[in-house]
Image (cartoon, rainbow over all chains, first blue to last red; front, side, top):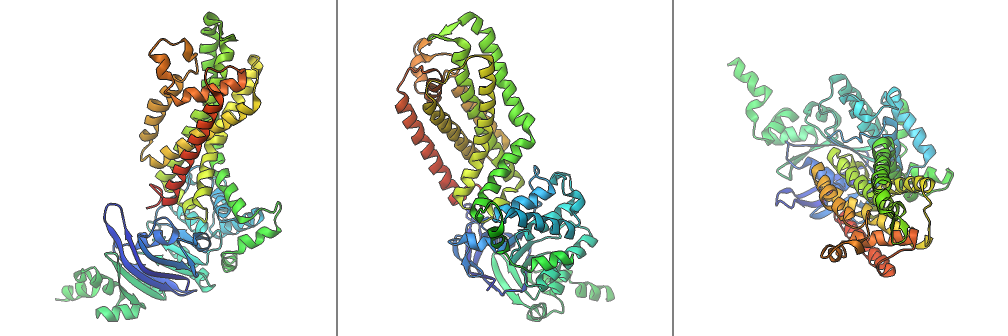
Length: 254
Length: 280
C-alpha cells in the first residue's frame, strides 16, 4: 500500500479529538480524494502522515515504512503541498526549491537539474531570483506544488491546492497532477471542488467529525446516499440536502 | 510540462541515488544537514546590515563610550588599561546576544509563517534540526565577535594569554546562548516574548555581570549578588583567556558552563523530539 492508516487517533492537548480511529488504505498509483467539511479532520490526518502532528495512537505506514518509528524513509516518499502558502520570505523561488531538495538529501547537481525542470514546468523561470514574498498568490501556489514535487515523491499530498486560485491556474494545476498520477505517483487530495474530485479521483472517502463515514467511487457514494451526484452525496453527509441543485430545481419548478 | 511529467515518474529515491556520482561525495544526511545550516546562515546574511552591521556598530559605540570616554578617567583596572579590560567582555557579549537573538527570531519567524513545516516534514531528525538551528546563531555571533576582535586588535594591543581556555570559553558561551535562543524561539508565540527575554533578562544579566567593571570593586551587597549571576563567570572565563586575569575558579566555571550547555541542549532536544510548540 502507498498509504495505510489504521485506527488513527489524534487528541490535542486541549482535549479535542480531531481523529477518532481513522483507517484508510491507498494503493500505489491511486488518485484518492478525502472530502469533508471544515474541521472534519482532513488536515490533521495529513499532518499526522507528514510528521507535522504526532498521532495519539494508531499506525501510519507509507510504502511499508512506519511514519513515526521509521520517519526518515516514510517522509522521503511523501511530498506535501499544504493548504497555507507557507513559503519562507527570506528565500528566492530557486532557493526555495534548492533548500527543499537539500532537506531531502538530493545532491547539488541533481537539485540544480530538478530546479530547472520544475521552474520551467510551472512557468516560474523568470521569477527564479525573486523573493517568495513578492510573488502573486497564483505564483506562490505554483511554487508550493513545485516544492512538493522537488524530491520526486511517490506519494503526493495536496491539501486544498486550488483554494483561492483563478480558473485557468486551477485547470492547469489539475492537468499537472493528473499527468503525474498517470505516470505512477500516488495522490491524496483534499478539495472543496467536488466536481473536480469526481473527475480526478479513483476513490473518495468522506470524513466528518474525525471519522471516515463513507468511501468508494463517486458513483458508489452517490448510490449509498441515494442521490445522483457526488455533490448531493456530500450535501447529504453534512445534512444540507436542501442546498442540492436537484432540490432547488424542483422547488423552482413548483 | 512534459519534462515535469517525465521526471516526476522517476520516484522519490532518485536524489539519493544520484548522490553517489556527485563531488564531493556527501551522503543524504550530510547534504540535509548542510542545507539546514545553509538556510540559517543565508537568512542572516541576507539582512547583514541588521544582523552583522548593527551589532558591530553597537560594539564600537560601547568601545568609544566606555573605553575612550570613561577610560580616560579610570586609566587602569587590575593592572590593565580600562579599554583592554572591557573588550573581552564586549566580544563575549557580541557573541552571546547575537547567538540568542538570531535563533530566537529565526525560529519564531518560521513558526509564524509556518515555513518551518518544510524542515519539520523533511526526513531530518530532531538532533539534526536542533543543531542546525543552533548553528545559525552560533555562527552569526562568532562572525560579529571575530570582527570585533579583529578591530580591537587594530585599535588596542589585546593579548591572548590562554588560547585554549579562550576558545573553549567562547565556544561554550556561544553555544549556551544559541541554545537559549532556540529554547525561547520554540516557546515564544509572539515577537514580544523574545524581546522580553532579550531586554529584561539577558541584557541586565550581561550588563550586571561585569562587562564594564570588575565585581571586586563593587560595594556590598552588590559584589556578593554579582556572584549569583551566571554571566559573571562567563565573562571571567573569557577575560582570563584574553588577559590572564581572573577573580574566581576558572576551571570550575568552565566545567559548570559545559554542564549548563549540556543540560540546555538535552532540554531542547527533548522539545524537538516531542515537537513541543513545533508540531501539533
